[in-house]
Image 1 (tube, rainbow, N blue to C red):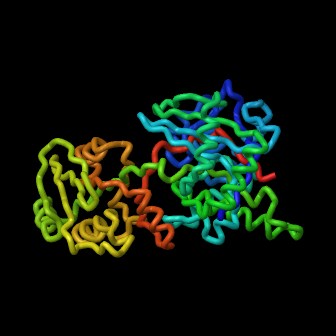
Image 2 (cartoon, rainbow, N blue to C red):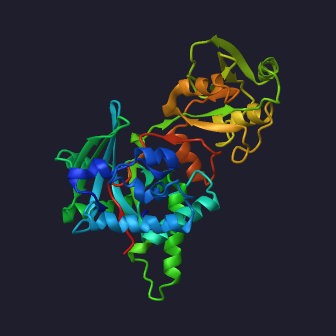
Image 3 (cartoon, rainbow, N blue to C red):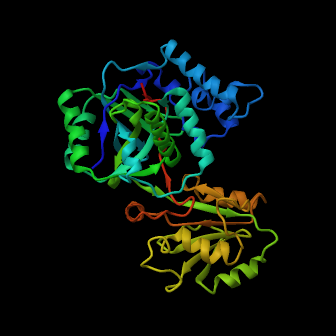
Length: 413
């Protein structure tokens, strides 16, 4: 079972939460962040390169120093204030008609090392190193990771009772998503939450934040090695996570656009697709995949339905049966010659929130030549793959809404 603990969050006063809270560091480039960041925005801490003119290299020493200085300044000005006691928190997000409710808590780095925190993606060492520097220099988890866990009736009941009260924060961000936040400071409820997770919840599943999770674990191990009196209970052994019951989460499609101008002609592509797919031209109106193993393709101003034929994939292979694998093997590699999705510059990825219109726009503009939309992976598939110890192909899952940064920060002191 997983080990958790409450923590005394460093967070903004209610009156300025909308000014401080920001989108995550990795969904904005530096130019977008500079344009979006107001005076009190957490982006000055998570993307401090925006405070330089011109924008500085985000990995330069002066930028890391600026991150530390800004974090200290935000606390000095009272824009971030530490709670008086260790609490759990409930964080809810509203997207359209759907609201998902999760706990904000601290998970233990040992659970990552032993596999109780299960991942479904590989990490890149350079990105791990960058996140590790940020955790180390701030001695804090500035942004949370995003976990899923098997639904538990007692924890669900606690959430329901908590959200019946008045939220500490309640606002709609500029992207239209609602964010709601409650504080659980009752000692008996805190003890119950800790006990249920430690005795009844077998695992956490990383939904978003693989690099931040790995970096937190590395910082914990680093601090452990420097402490001869290490017990495992020190605050540095824990890192901040927002944990949602898996049955509340929905994964959006994660689509592909390709630029292979020296490859086969459009007629050759369509002809070769017929070897493995049932191909149907759907005309100029956008077409979205309607089931697993059905894809849409946009090429030369027209949409196509591609349905993979039985026998072209292995239903007994959790990875091989994924649509991202089928598309990679039978189209990107076999027809377009794109073999490495991590390094090939001819392929790019578009989160489903941007819609089919973004796919056609990037092709019609001449930036890309071809686009593919995929049917979303299910949470059931993600959990099965993580439980098996396997790794999904790159850019398989896209979760929305993204967690709002700045609602809570965890100090390693």
